[in-house]
Length: 457
Image 1 (tube, rainbow, N blue to C red):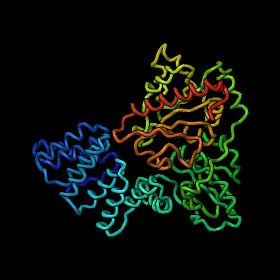
Image 2 (cartoon, rainbow, N blue to C red):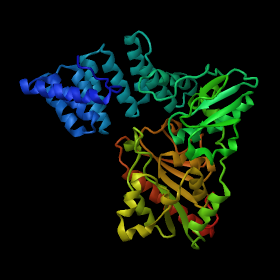
Image 3 (tube, rainbow, N blue to C red):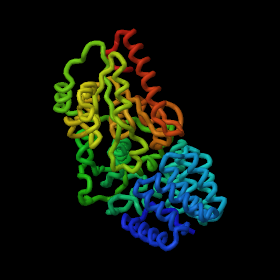
């Protein structure tokens, strides 16, 4: 059976696989497994159309190979062809009903298609065949359970991330805190995952102190000023050597330790916006043009994030919002995607570029304070605006970050946030159509009330 779970392979493995597959195909163009191995290496290189074609060529020569069907399903799912991906995985299981990797890939495809009940059933079947839950199966089950709001079991499974080879975190330096009373012990709270995750779970740091701990907080420099109100006993720069402490805990373990449920999500942390950041924002944004609505926009998160291609879009759909009378757009975008503003040429005047002036999240927070609304695809700025309590319309992918659940317009994690959800076809056009209609309604409502300068409710 062809191996199908190549998520944790080193980059060099792809080159070796590709060269071996090409040599095998030179010797025998009908070698089905070589075609599929070539497809696997192309998928990992992001060449999905070619990968899919290679797997299908392999199936021409060996239609009964469950592993090739599963590889095809992986590529189809990654290409956003979700229903086709699930169908291929179902065929793979029919051909190889006890293959553990095939069963795992089926579960992943079902979750990514938003078929959560089916995904949980598939995970149960894979657990049975494995003789128990592996770390990868527990991780997949965690993502599914958290997505449907089963925090009690989901957070327990979420700890399995630490056993996954690709998991990135600092090496342990002290015993893990298990949630018991701390009685004045020094607790090293370590950073994990991205900026948005740090903003999300910063709300738990005061609870560590309330549990009797003396927190030592590892913090990215970009977040230090805006989170300065947390006032831990000690700040540690991200990646610095571990301090002397009694116990340690990863920040993403805190929701589990504090028994978080959908009904008990703590409110967002109170952010600190320094006076100099507010002064910069006042100078840049100036006085409001009468009768206008200031709308911040962000269209992409950090490009190094694995799922960014799924959650991001481009600047162009946001420009349609500038057609609405009274709407003024302000870009909060950072990173390589800022170049899309330069590409607009004279039309770039439709969007005020704030990104070049944003040195950290405190600067971004100060800008957001002077806006009426933020409309964006999901990234760390969504957590920032949500923590500030600024009205934010978050445009989320079909299977978004788990805090957004799978249905509805609201999330308990950020009361000021409204969600606009992508459908299973992964098309942003209907999402932006809904946003434009909602913004038309909002401008009309506020114009009727004569309250455009008062900020959204």
